[in-house]
Length: 141
Image (cartoon, rainbow, N blue to C red; front, side, top):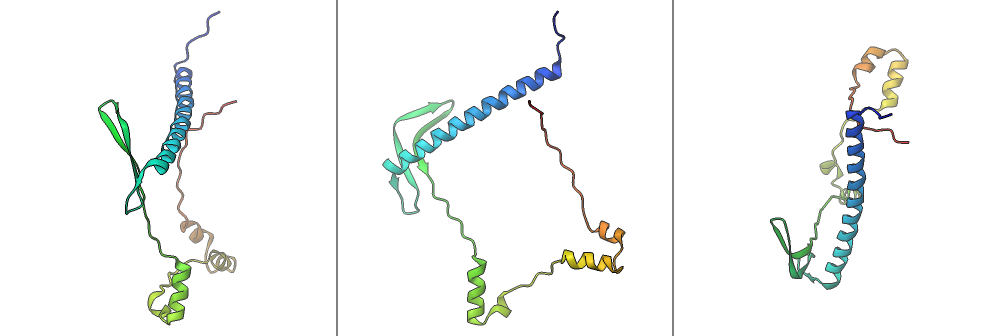
């Protein structure tokens, strides 16, 4: 007896197949990237900014793109180390000039105010926002 066609099940089958292929491709792509990066480090030329470049012996043409050089680009980000900055501010006596105190709600104190009747349940509830998001989660066994 022939089974009836189920368009939804066919879509899920196609999706699951593409997902599996994508995971395989991503894993392979990342492995190739890591091997190429290792080659760039070993054989490339480092510039003054810390980036390393490696010219290909033979250009690679894929679609409308031609790859002739590979680059391991250094990207530098600078962030303030708050702990060291606070120590410096205290040491130099400038903490009162450079430290900002931001008002923050103490949740325990807020609930204590509710417990002793200074804030109602409705008032507490009105302080919280609720956001609903949805995720696509097929169940596989």
